[in-house]
Length: 227
Image (cartoon, rainbow, N blue to C red; front, side, top):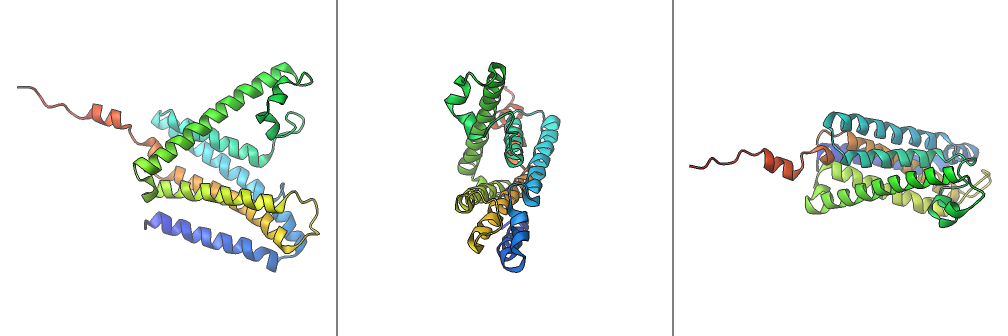
């Protein structure tokens, strides 16, 4: 086990413990304020994802690689998702994925066109980043390396957070049971932790997306001289 993974697992352990103990040790109203949609944990998630995007963009500009741009867009998308879309512009994020939104005459045509183009760009970036990551984890056994391990943990945390969100539902009041408060804390807390692990993977010097492509490495190798 690498040193990075050991520290990552320690952070995960203490963070999950804090999330689990919060509904038992804090006042119900305090727990609700921490775990609500506009609470400090979600606001922290927004900044973590945006910092990860800016950090990756800076490395991308220095390395002059195209693949990391897909990860930059995905991180921006996650930050925007955590911050929430302005209801005046978009009624809901799910509406963007339906055909009705783009044929609705009540919506400005220019807005529909811009939204559609942006959606296609983000979807292409999402597919590219997921496929390339799975390829790295499988073909190059990236799950054995810190960058692959951190991204795998981040993905698992996001999936678990979605399950917690389904359990918690949309709560508008702190007058609820302890199970729902646990779900609220784990939903927001695990999403924030996913951003932290993604930022950690992006900060590693050996992050695979910045390694030279195999074709470029072979091209750079000196060819044997012919007699």
